[in-house]
Length: 167
Image (cartoon, rainbow, N blue to C red; front, side, top):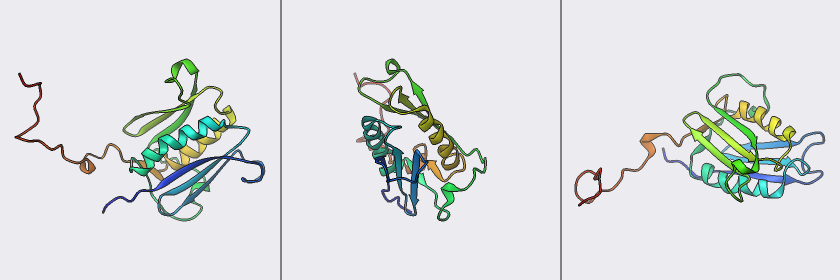
């Protein structure tokens, strides 16, 4: 079964675009599509742009995939399955690459999103960590970048690849 590109788009919501009292609103649709709205007072525009730039690659190329079950599933209580971990961690600007507001650090079963201090509020960070605990921890979205069977074979001209540079 081949993988079809999907999308996850982040928005800086203006007043009235998300339900009153929420700082994050997620619309998760069948087919690997999700729209995530951050309250405009809790996220800088550059931060939202950076998230879109990174997730366009992650989700669009199948490194993160949706495992659909039914409508409204993301808004149900956490099951505590512990399938994987994804978290936001706010760090000082000196710990981030220049000009970056978001930087993912990944390994199998773990994704820590480093967030430049001042890019979002701690309340947004805490809310997103709860959403990620449900979405990633319960396996509704899963990490597929480490799936060796899906990686293309490395082409070679004559036999196996060289382990050292030719002399």
